[in-house]
Length: 307
Image (cartoon, rainbow, N blue to C red; front, side):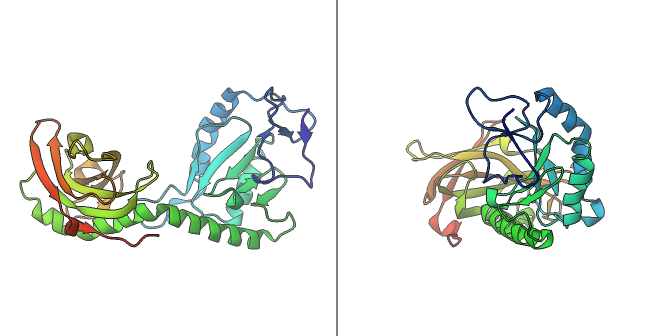
């Protein structure tokens, strides 16, 4: 049955790109690694049962008392992906929280219950991913005999640097908006919205190119779905609307999505016109049809240095 793993062969993600413990061979010829001579056939129902039973356990691995102050773009300390095509559970950790004790708990407590599975602690690059087997922990492509403490320090530093580089556009948005929010909250008055400003060199996650980002402050009863941003018909590249938003309290501070609705006074939405654009735009209230002309001037766009 496929290739068997032994005590000296627990591959990293870079060393082996096939399937794990399927219990059968793939008709397409993609290799399958099995941890022992007999492995039961994998069915997706097995994963869904496991996910329902254990997802909350992973979420509790980092206690509330250890959580950092609220960060509007931070991912959860531990997030379990809700799909699996083989017996590999993909877990996305915040490497700021990752400790050797936490990794060993996953190995001892989770894989102790599910010995046919392995856990991948995912990072932005396979070289930084940690693969936890029931009897071995692989820290990226580092040797099996490396000190676990040294390996975790090395991988965590690289994983955090990659994450910070990926999140830079979002971090720029947070810093830009939070600096201007108190003034925008004071000035909104009875107006339906306030344009907070625009950033350039701000890459949108679903777009290959850097784009502008325009921020709109509305009251909490409205969100991006209430307004549309339109440019002239010949605007090359168009305008990307996002579902992202920030919740804002009465003082002009960004607050968590879990903040009670009564404490959310405003929301910030944003759109992404092509980089380098300035000129006429129209903000449309989708509910009333009202249109508000807006002139995006070059001097109103905040420049951020390219990364």
